Length: 154
Image (cartoon, rainbow, N blue to C red; front, side, top):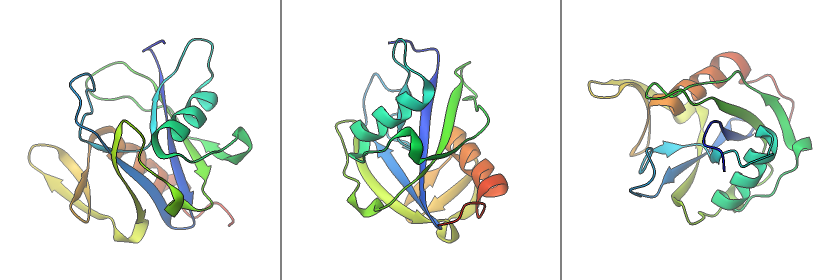
């Protein structure tokens, strides 16, 4: 496994997007955070192959590379030099998502239900119900909403 790159999937269906809450784990720097399904690339694995594998492991949804609508620009966590490849993926039945071993909970959020806010400890955030979306996930989601949202035919 190479910890030099990661990939995440923004699984969308019209105005809905799939979010996960990561389980609390001592070996996970994003432990307990709200995120998109994803993870580190394995040896000889492309970012697209990684995101398809990680989505299957984390939320039990099965996709192929044909389901990828777009690859967004690389994003980086503030805390480290880790290129993260965000992919926009066409979801078909988001309600079928089930949490895998690393995921505490899965939710389907409508973009219109996200509330933009500011937290003194975390900076700019979105609130969705009792979840707080911040940091890298906030930045990727903002890029999606500003540049890609509404550009795909469903």
